[in-house]
Length: 124
Image (cartoon, rainbow, N blue to C red; front, side):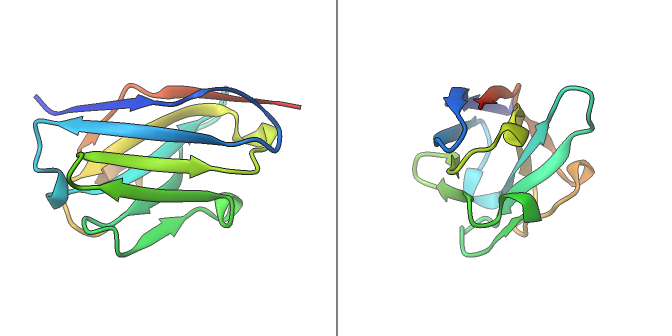
């Protein structure tokens, strides 16, 4: 059974940084595009960032452009989300997802596997 396990969440002050990791197992990681989504309390899950199988192309939602960076290590079977200049509105549960295609996508229904999520809380 495919597993995606997120880590790296926590409590951080506004302006601070966190790096989320998503460790994948039981899948051919290099054959999957990876994405990060988030869900804040009382809100729908939203797209944050995605990366192609090779890491050569990335896409971001407008609100995180210039602050967040998605990357991957196909040797370690791990995807990352570096989050800088964090704001209170970034507070959410962050989920990683794997898509059985090489190209990145922004819609959650295009992803096949999901992690359990990791909480990110940004205080003012």
